[in-house]
Image (cartoon, rainbow, N blue to C red; front, side, top):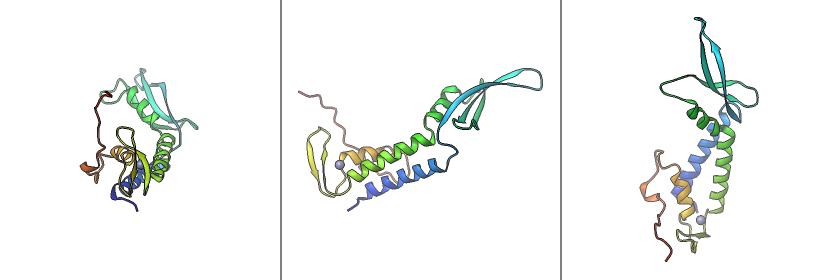
Length: 148
Ligand SMILES: [Zn+2]
């Protein structure tokens, strides 16, 4: 049996994966270059490019008031290849935690899950907690206890 949380989470991951599959290129990197202006000056251009063919995907002339090289590095690190890999791993974890199974609890004690939502699925679902449809009651249990 598939729970609402599990199917909703799977839907979010599959949507994210399909967006990455439709994006240009697989692997992105940041490259910088100087661009000459008509007035004879030059701008430092920094761009996220397709690592394979060098196609410029997103670029910004520095200094820029809203975007800097760190933002582009963040975008490049989250390229389609990385997102697809993340989604494949999360989908495999969901496959392992569907239906009745043994699972680790918040305090690392194994417990038997009967068609319910286990702590692992709750944690993966929480990655999408800012998306419409996420229910607060799906939040993972927290334990701030120190071992005694
Ligand atoms: Zn589980």
